[in-house]
Amino acid sequence: MKQRGSKKATQFTESVIREMTRLAQDFDAVNLSQGFPDFATHQVLKDAACAAIQGDINQYPITWGAENFRQAIAMDFSRRYGARVDESQVTVCCGSTEAMLSTLLAVLDPGDEVVIFEPYYENYGPDSIISGAVPRFVRLREPDWSFDLGELEAAFNNRTRAIIINTPNNPTGKVFTVSELEAIAKLCLKWDVLAITDEIYEHIIYDGHKHVPMATIHGMADRTVTINGLSKTFSVTGWRVGWAIAPTDLANPIRKMHDFLTVGAPSPLQEAGVAALSMPASYYTEMAAGYARRRALMCDILERNGFRFERPMGAYYVMTDIAHFGFQSDIEFATYLVKEVGVAVVPGSSFFNDRSAGRQKVRFVYSKRDETLLEADKRLAKLAARVAR
Ligand SMILES: Cc1ncc(COP(=O)(O)O)c(C=O)c1O
Image (cartoon, rainbow, N blue to C red; front, side, top):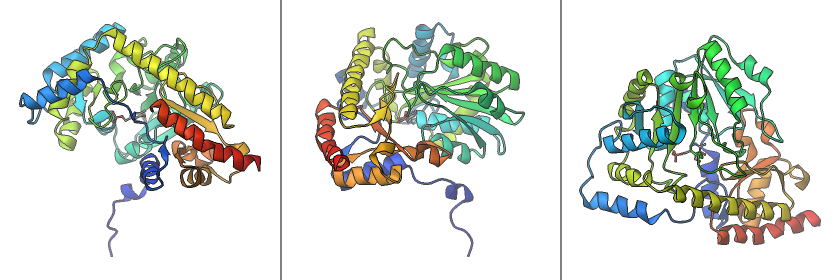
């Protein structure tokens, strides 16, 4: 009998993160696995989405995005970072997830290599397999999740077409510094390589750290694709609205891939996206302050319950070390936690190509209401009691 699934489909497993969310539901566990807020988005966004639907903006949008939304995206990026970007460079997609895949499909050919820092957001592995590329992994190491320049240099060669950078970073909370970005840029220029940067946590950043887009680093404007979206900044992960900002000559191939993958992102929600991007500066300050508060609460809870970790500089995850709890693996620990303690987390190995590097780690998410985090705290006492025995 012929093989029925494709070879590609056999090369990666189902998303572990989304599997943990399903287990959380089955065991009525507090879900600290998948990165979505359990609190409401801003009323301005809800009203704008409802008004767009009532106003009959319900048909296919322009494939690459409604013109006013693309203009708003280009203006926001230009104003914030002093870069000169216009709407012809923007492709609006079904979430930054699709923006990343459309971009990789648009720039990679089978056999090309793509450099990925690990631990990484789990989609990048399957994304590169789907686009036929060969991923080359470079390790980020604690305590500050920095990379070894020699290791990075060794990952580049004539087959390298792109490097994926996610800053602020999921799952580590790392924020890449200007000097790190400059070192990466130097290699991109040397090897004629594109940088594809996932900046979806751009506004969720702590302790005075600054987000610097790779596109603003000297020499990188015409070799960077910047990916972002509404999901995290505006707490609307279910809307599926994201975008890619690309050099003009790459916008067209990205738009073609996007067109044949999905045709377009939801038209009324793009309209609401225009309202989102016109929120005053205070919205961003308050949102970031809310996350700083949740980070403090999460870190307190983790400390109280015996976890070891580095405080995140950005995004809304904590990667913790669990070696001292005495479990064989991250999977055994996460399974115990969801079934017996009632808290769902993500096993660390799912963020590493070299699974062994994550065997004694799990990731917590804290984009949650205080009540949710405090309920997890209460339940985690059971873990502390088991360890004390
Ligand atoms: C680094 C990173 N990129 C992209 C996404 C998905 O974003 P979107 O909802 O825009 O597809 C996530 C979600 O957790 C993420 O952590």
